[in-house]
Amino acid sequence: MIKNKEKVPITFFYTDNCERQAIEPIAQEAIKRGYKVLFSMDSGNYAEVGVYCQHACVPNSRFSVVMLHDLAQRHDIWPNFWSHEPWNRFDIGFLPGQSWVERWHNQSHLPYSRTRYGVFNTGWPKSDIVYNDIELFKKKGESLRKILNLKHEKTILYAPSWENDRKQDEFVKSFVDLPVNLLIKQAPWPESYTEVLENIREMKELHLGLSSNIHIVDPELSIMYCLCVSDVIVSDESSVLTEALLVGVPPVAVVDWLIPDRKPHRFASVPYEYVKKTTKSRLRDEVVSIINNAGKNLSEIYCDRDQQFSHLGKSSVVCMDLIEDGIAGLDSGVVQYRHLSLESQLNVDRFEYQRSNELLLSGNESDAVNILMNLINRKTSCWEVYCALGEIAFKNNDFNSAATFFNKSAPLSSNRIFPMAKLMDLYMAASRNDLACSQFIKICGQLPPSDFAVRKMRAFVEAFKNINLR
Image (cartoon, rainbow, N blue to C red):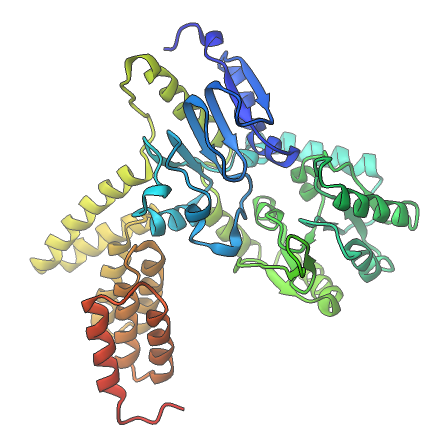
């Protein structure tokens, strides 16, 4: 137990209110545990314990924690996130779920992806708003519905990353004549973004009072409560498209809406398989179709949720456990974390994989597969597990399962060429020349060719040299 907790203040660093909302649940958990909590918008300030939730910064703390400022952070360069937002100067790092864990493992061989004492899969603290007390969350949602006087059964939520080029007006014009509630939630931009704030003001002035089904909410309101009363969310590329999964709301991205973070403005980037992509001209039809088929794909949405988020309802507790462990080691220099880091968990899983490999070599395939499947069910990040199951499925002529496992293996491996080449072998054996060629092209675009890669390329050319591949 830590004595004199009030003497070890925890400072939470952020640059805007979106980031503050991301760290607020951890701060509340810290207060529950008796710690003094401070908030600061200047990461240069010294802190005994600092929690940093922002884009690339350098900590100035005795003990430092780094976490994502949103779920889509630098999605334009995934998985190469840490090359632009290095974590190697921090003590520990937090990730929200399995998808980010896979990105980290893909880059974990690089020094700047590693914190001093480990990166942990802690979940996304904002998810606690939903899952700490689901009934209370629903009651707050119903309270919001009454306050806004939402008269229609269905609600379409508009929540862009940026407000520009009259996107809000295009949204309103797409649906204002339908018997639905239109809920408009802009992000709480800091005062320094004067142009964006002016766009938001202009759109609010244009739509306020225009129709009884248009409802403009306070930007400071948590997006979670807006999602609670919504049936579908429309955005450009915002991370709210991922947070929508927490409450089973289908996310829709308009990919030809522009993003003004560079000149000339670019189109929205949406590298999320679970988001429905559409264009401005197709927006109305796509959203109406989703509303008319409400609940049809709910199980799929929750499957995607579980891939994006871990520790639902307990994320802040896990985060504070790790922070508290770090504080306990400040004076002694000895830190014993009560949750396994990603690397430690990977080592545990890899030991289990080695045990399964020994069983395979002894001819005991059944027990080996049981071990491997248990690891799969635990969502292991050990790429060899998926590769081994792919090879077993390949041997048993189950090409579909083999392809699934090899595809799962590749993003987790720092040497992606190996599982990708295995998949190419599979396509060649199945006489799927088109897929084999496609896989070959992907291999060529990966890491600098190793001797193994060169051999694979040579084998591919030899196998297909007599085939006209047009």
